[in-house]
Length: 57
Image (cartoon, rainbow, N blue to C red; front, side, top):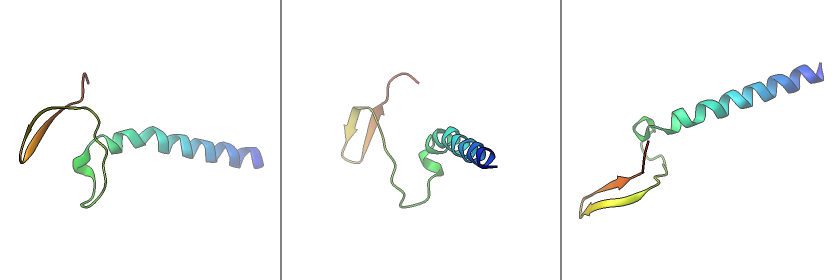
């Protein structure tokens, strides 16, 4: 019984981790006021906007 519960817990955790990048991939799906992380180099900047070069992808 304990092995079954451990296997179920691992499977549930693995499934959650596998879907997390898909959830985090689109910042527009986040609720208002949520924090997001951006990674890359600023390619162009103006006083009210910027273009982020995040490389190939």
